[in-house]
Length: 630
Image (cartoon, rainbow, N blue to C red):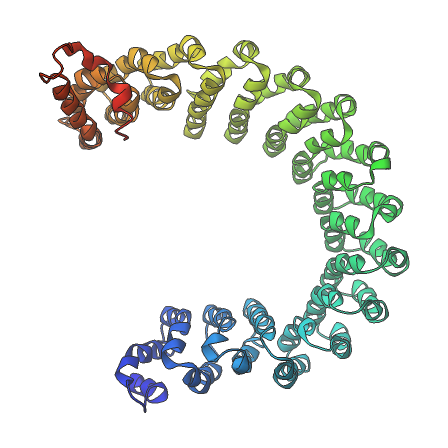
């Protein structure tokens, strides 16, 4: 059968063949019709190789893998990845060239991700070849791939030139692939051009790579031209400043005005990197006008990509002329984009525009940027409003919370009731920071009512966030403020006709008990929780059980014994199974504390402490709770 065939291949001869039986099973699975079994076996390939030993791995396993290379893409992908880490398993660097045949086959398959992974593994093991082996074994492989009949092998070759030495003699091969008849090969060459340029000497970059770059940037296929833009970044970083204008900028200007929006999009997407590569002078003279054009591009995708780079572009401008360039050339374009017809453009701008305030300073922010922020806060697109809200702290650092609150607070209050719940959520998440900066008086006057309204929002995520928000506010303003302002309103919700709101009361108590402390929790919150234990809705009752377990460590010990324990015991006999379950969970979780409490009470009432009155048990919780944690 197939298993005996596998054993005959890999396990016959020599002592200890019985111990290799599991390995024979794994190898058998490599031939199984079930793809998942083959995939599992491939992932255990290192186990198979370890069991076989380095010699049999080289002479039997690798030829077997090379001969049976045709399989499902996911199996081939796993195999290509595994082989990149196989050097030790074939006997070390001396025998690493044995891994080349299966990887060469994988580098020619039709599926792109498999080829890419095979090339990645080939590049990895190339570092482990000796110079002699590199010349004898690795370089012939690259030549075979570069001259292959199928475009798949030639695309793979493009990623291997940068690891072949001496590099200069490979320029001719690379040049051939850059002018290949198949667009897929030219794309691969364009994507690897910058990488290849980085390992060449500067003279070869000027004499050979620049002409190839120019040719690829003018290719008839826009998918090739846009990849040449990526290469432009790498090439520009290699050249001296004096060569950039003549060798790179004509091609870059051409790309920025390319007839294909995809090429212009790539220029916009890489603009910050291009800006750093060419330096401040060329940026002022060439890139500023190009950036303006991209911000005004007829295609929304290009405008969005450029808008997303506004902050980075402005940050990277030379300091001596930064403000002038922004105010004269960039800001007018930004003002137009605020009212762009495309929501993706406006959203991209909203995600970065707040960052301009730290660059332009307080006066310019108040005069020029605040009106734009207000316009975006009122935008019909929720994502635009969300992005502005999420970055308010940038503006706050520059103009101060008072100015911010006067200008933007009305819009924020309006957004707190926005129809889109994600917008409301963003406002809630920003509220603790806003409250801390505004101060308690301003907060109580302007924003407190909003925070309470969120507790009864129809969306659970909002109610949950509002509960966490209250806890953070108490941490900022203190327990006394909570007792006077927050706690009474929260507890009043326990009588709400809507059971969801009553449950929110319990969630708030869970969150507030720790920050409010023992006295407020025991005297004000606990009675409400105990009263809710008789609620008609089972969901409320089992949340009472969970709440009692949660706040237990904060409560006074006498309240735990006299009030909490009896209520939990009643809930543990509830007719509803969920209520009974959570009550029993709470009792089980708190039983170690009660046991310790009983032991300490007995100790305190022992004859050796005759002067202690029974009432002293009312004051034990602070010391006991240091010993027991729930």
